[in-house]
Structures are given as C-alpha cells and as structure tokens.
Length: 90
Image 1 (cartoon, rainbow, N blue to C red):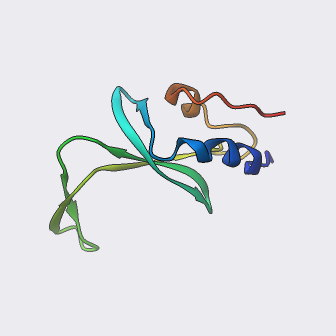
Image 2 (tube, helix red, strand yellow):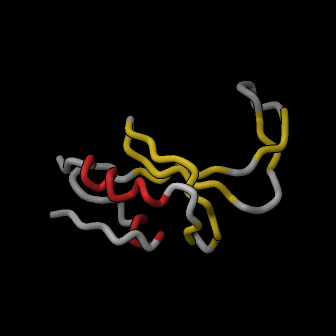
C-alpha cells in the first residue's frame, strides 16, 4: 500500500487555490486525512442540497471529493494528474 502522507503534505499548499477538473473550474476547499482526499467546490451558482431523507432543503455550493489513492490503495488516483497536481512520490 502506498503511504499517502508525503503526498498529503505536498497538497496542503493547494487549499484556497483554483484547479480545473472534469472540465470545470473548482476551488480546493479542504484536504481530508481519513480517508486521504481532496475536497473541491464549484464556483458557480449553488445547487439544491438534499437532507438526510433526500428532500430538498437548501442551496449550497456543489462539492466533489477526489481520493488521493486509487481503489486498490496501491497507486495514486489518476484523477490527480487531470487536476494538474505535480506529485513527487519519492
């Protein structure tokens, strides 16, 4: 299993910066450490957010969570390259 802690430290400087992912301009709003993931927020109009039961409840910016590791936990998530994050693994 790949140790994501060094990569996590490299990504800390991205908080508050704009990135491009899935054809959208997004802002890095947080970096989670359990599980290791990058949290991105859409900069456009807020979307309707559902409550626990699926009922519309309020308008909030759309967020995306991008895991740092792939599903196997052995390699970096290839989506990080799409975001344009230069990662040093050694």
